[in-house]
Length: 488
Image (cartoon, rainbow, N blue to C red; front, side, top):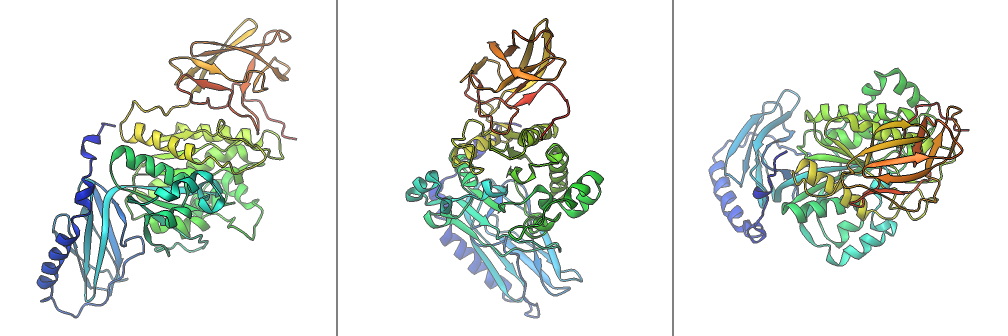
């Protein structure tokens, strides 16, 4: 993607100087519209269209809502003074598309039927969804030190939050009970820490307003975020979903969180999604997570009619009770990267306690996600963002050579005494391997194994990072075999 940063700079003084002009503009607009017949019925907007919102820049955005059937709704935007109108359908719904300018604001939008709705303090910038389970939802109230340190300097007019309450429903919803808020010490304390650090990095680097929509629920599996009709089309996914243990604390049936927390967002133009989920899918069907997440991504993109970026966080090292169950899920997460416009960031070097499924370092996770977005979506290719990933393997006598992508300047091994490098012969029994680096190739061997056939790195529930590229990015765990895994 081309580098568009030349168009991103905002005059922040100008952002705060538009308000008087907006008032004059709408005073004139109301005078003009006062001659319109007052036979119109009241119009209503979804909560997602509200004061303080951020709209996606340089595109066609959708405005929508409800009115009486046959009612004409007029929409006027202050950034260009244009008015467009639409007649509500027989079921009272209406929608229209209008062009947004380059990043900036604040602006106002006027909706006019019998009643008038004026939205103010609207910014134009970049909008991202932050979704998943508890590691995405964690915030300042969770005691995160990084967020507590941010609170004294949290007043950021260029960062806006829309936090969706946890909503589980079998019926698809077209609205959600939330409101856009400006980032400050109060609103930040209860918003996703990963989302905030992601958005802050984007705002500081691009110089544009950032709108962040949090749709996260601790304990949820990916099935509940996937439309039920998509799960039902796959015998594999349907069978797995039917065996999820019910819970009193979160939904467990397919589509329930999607219906209440994602469906209301689908008319709203977004730049992309960051996703931190997977812990609750660790178990008997860990290996099927790639099919599940692939289905989720396809259906979300279909709902938005946009192949937006989808960036995920690989689940952190943790002592899950079933051996290798998390390793298999991480492998499945890696497999999802075969989809276009996806990427993954690691946490294997960011965990201090593998007995806690909620690592407290959310700042670096958010920063890594932002660096991926800056490099891959916004064209700032010079930003370090790629993890070394297993490319291909070759065997020469008693050694196995593994080559990596994204390690052009070489590899580094940290704590080689840790049991993260394994090698096996034809008996399929893995032993600790000796390893050495040759450029972007890692050489495995074990003096006691003749004619080895497979190696693994970090393929364990609790393995932390031992292998990095020269830019300090940890390598993605992998195995070269595809043998059945005994998880007993």
